[in-house]
Image (cartoon, rainbow, N blue to C red; front, side, top):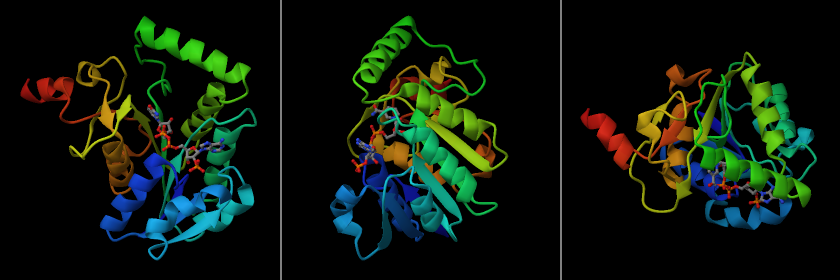
Length: 227
Ligand SMILES: NC(=O)c1ccc[n+]([C@@H]2O[C@H](COP(=O)([O-])OP(=O)(O)OC[C@H]3O[C@@H](n4cnc5c(N)ncnc54)[C@H](OP(=O)(O)O)[C@@H]3O)[C@@H](O)[C@H]2O)c1
């Protein structure tokens, strides 16, 4: 199994590299030129393609021959970084490749998610400020996932809760909609978010799903397991 990790040098990306190597996968990564040094711990175990993740030529080369592509979707700047990344992966990944994308709970596939007013207000204010300073364009991540949902590729969009660092607690649990009781704790270890992304490669039941995940040891997940 050959796997390409787009955005490999970030926190999520680095965890995904390790999980993929642990499974015996051959790993290829794309990251910005100035971040290649962050991949030094794995320099003999993976191939790195330096470049921005929305650079179509870089993506085309990196995903060639890969059975799966794991993409960290981040809406940096205001030049369609996330949608450009998603489009390049959709356009150039091998036919039949498993395509796994990361994003947050704010993304909705079918409009059935139920958000608290606090969540919605914080998101709206943060998005407005970030866009004002041309740092982040949340709408571009929405556009990226709109294109993925419309695609007939074998995609999965993994929607992360709030994240924390720490030892792995195991594979997160998931539900179809934010607002479902199992997700109430709204917390996942970043290492386990990465684990879910990598495990999704071989989980065909997740094709064309947008699982909202939460840590398997959180109170809401444990309460659900007991019931
Ligand atoms: N943070 C959260 O609380 C949270 C919650 C839910 C879901 N998520 C999702 O989780 C995923 C990873 O999020 P994360 O917060 O954990 O971040 P992360 O893994 O640290 O990844 C950040 C990525 O953005 C890149 N990046 C940073 N600054 C950049 C810039 N100015 N221009 C272009 N690329 C830049 C980084 O590349 P370099 O290594 O080159 O800097 C890295 O690949 C995202 O899809 C996010 O939507 C995050």
